[in-house]
Structure formats: structure tokens, C-alpha cells
Image (cartoon, rainbow, N blue to C red; front, top):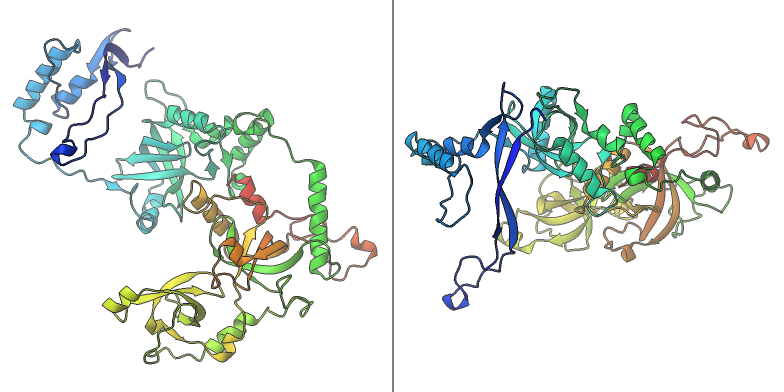
Length: 543
């Protein structure tokens, strides 16, 4: 049709096979492995003619490249098959030689002034984020489709190349159901097409820029732009993740429509059974009752804060109550025994000097001491996990002590100058950072595909919020691969996290007669109706 390129097949030839050039073992080098033989088809590509009748031939792409000195013509033997445009290509090459164009020029080519953020580190990408956000809608070309929701784009206007991920969208990973179809659709719609990219944020794990991508139609065809996220959702080849399902009703509607049509990844999808929802609500009521001391059945709930995220399913909590099954269970029926422990520890550390460390103080591995955190210059309890003896040999003042902050769950390498013996009053309190795993979830590890995204989502969902933590079960921390330093009080909890106030209604002052009706909960639902959980958010995100 109009605006289409023309492809003329010239010939086919077997390429590859045989070993790559190089000496064999007798010559002192191991022979290169044999390359796979394959059949390759060679063709001439012609652009559509401008302003001429249908069927007219435009410029030969190969000739355009050669005449600019950006490619050279292959020297064929007399009996070799060759392009029907071979003579024109040789003529174009002679013109490039005479004009000293491109590779035929004696001058060094000017360096390309392009800021490549696709291979930059996380901190560099974060520093570049405000610049892209201020630029608004960026005219780009999609250079490469990494996956259905990750693109490498080039913006000539701002002289940069960067990787962007579709904001709030996750396509199937390689090998998962629908992955091939999603990749094919993304390539057909986006690859080597003009696009308008609007950057919203930066992924704190991978450095990719989270953005919306509008694919622009070809000028010859006209028409409206295409939202890549919307097209993938419409075909049922991706899922909404995180808060995007609530923030963008239009995309959420497309996902719901794909679910209803059972297309793509939603093939065979079944709505949650009402019976399962009723069982879940009953379980939440029992857990809340246990937390209030009204019964021994079901999980017990505690107020908790997430202090450190390790992966998409693992984190450290600070519980404001006793750990079930531990030696302190039953000593504090109101769950308040440990509520002020952190403050008590900090009071014990407050008297530490910020001057020089005691002469010769060098804690060994496994020793509990006080460490001064570099981010705020405050003292906290740490356990020394490793000592870099080589670094100390080179420089006695080097940061050579790998320390784990036992009340928060994070780690940092510190020099001896930032370590002190731990006061006795601070030594008496057990570690406050409790390792926990989100119950009933299997999440990719950090470094695996989608593992970084899962960890980032958990961090976003839990940052600065208080939760009601239902402890479903517990096991030994060392059996989960946690060291003694990182094992808290020796147990690994399997938990369900819900934002405080959403998990159960405030029953204070209610009577036995009105317990069935309950008061309105913080999220507007009746008593016994559980609010959304962090576990459920991760599951809904497909991570």
C-alpha cells in the first residue's frame, strides 16, 4: 500500500560453518569452536517514492548508506551471486571516496554527544530523573524492546538514551504463559517507532525510569497515538501492579475487561469464590480476637513497623508485643512489654562519647557493640559479622567492620573509630528487629527476574506506615538460612500485614450483644471484614 517500503529478494547463501580463524593447539592457541551454518537471504530495500504514482520506486537504502561513507561494498568473486544494484553501489562508493565521506575521511569522526543512561548506575539515574521530569513529554525513538514492558529509547531532543519501564504494568516473564505473545505485540507496536515518553519516577532497584509511552502513528498514515500499556492490557498480556490499578481507572477498566473475556494471561481465570472470602473474613475475626486476648485460636495480631526490606517476601519488623512461642509469651498479656524497649536502649547509648574510640578497641566477629550510623551520626546496637583484616593491614583507620544493626535489620561497614563497647543497660534487651516472611507467598529473590521490582513494591507499600501484623506461624531463623546475628530472637515469623486500622474495627466499649454488628472500621467496612493486606497487594501485582 501507500507508504510501504519495497523489498526485492536477491539471493540466498549458506553462511557460517567451519572454525573461526585462529591458530590450533599446535600453534599455541586453542582452535575456535565451529560456527553454526545457516541459510541467509539477501535483499535490496527501497523506500517509498515521494509524490509519484503507485508502484514507483524510491531510493535504495543500501546506496544511501554507502554514498555517505557509512558502509563499504563487499568485493565479490566473478562467480558469486550479487545484488542487481551492485554497479550502483560501486558508483556510490566511488563518490564517497572522492568526497572523503565517513570511513573514507582522513579526520577522526566527531564524538557523538549522547548521554547514555541505559548503562548508568542507580545513583546517576536518580540524579538525572528531575531533568527528565521537567522536560515533560519527550519525543523518542524506541531502539530496542527488552521485554514487553521495558524499552530502550533514544531522545535526540535531550541528547540521551535511557531504559524505561511502563509505569504500573508487569508483563509475563520469559517462559511464563503469554510471554511470547506479549513480546511480539510490543515489538510490532513499538520497535523503531516514534514515541512520546513521560517519565514519572525512577525504579530504586534497577535504575529504569518508570514512564507512560505513547506510540506515534506514521506520518503517511495519520491517526491517533497508541498507549502501549493500554494495548497490552486490552490483549490480556500484562497486569497492573502497585497503586496504578487505583490511580488509573481507564487502565483498570481494560484489565477488568480482559479478565471478563478470559484472554491472554487471564485464560482460565476464575473469580474468587464467595466461600473463600467468607473463610478469610472469619479467619481475620479470629486473629483479631486472639490479639485482644479473647481466645487462643487463630493468629495473634500485633502493632508493627517495617524497619528494613530484604526482598519481595522478607523484611524486618519491630513488634510492639511479645513474639508468640518465645520465652516471654504470657508475661505481657497487654502486648506492651516491648513497646518502649527501643527508647530504653537509646537512653543507654545516649551517654556514649563521640570522641576517640578506646585505645586498641577492635571487636571480633559475633561481638555486640555500639555503632555510629553514618546517615545520622547516632549510636545504635550492632553485631560484628565480618572483619576485613586485609583492609586493616593497609590502613588501620579503614572501614573494615561489617556490622548488622540488630534493632533495625540494616547493615553497614564501619571503621573502628565508629565502634564502642556496649553499655550494660543496653546489653540486657534482646534484639528488636524481628525477621519475618510474608505468609503464603513465593516471590523471586533479589537479582532474579522481577525480584528487584517485588522488593521495591514491598518497600513502597510499607514505608512510613504502621501495620497490624497477624502471625500465622513461626519457625527457627537458622533453618531459613539466617545467621545468629540476623536471626533476631531466634524465630522467623510468617505474617500477614495490614495497615493499622484497616484490619479490624475498634471494639473498645462494645457489648457482647452488639459484637455481631460492630462499628465502622477505618476503611469503611464493618467489624470482622478485613482490609487489604500487603500480601494481597504483592499477589495482585503478579510478583
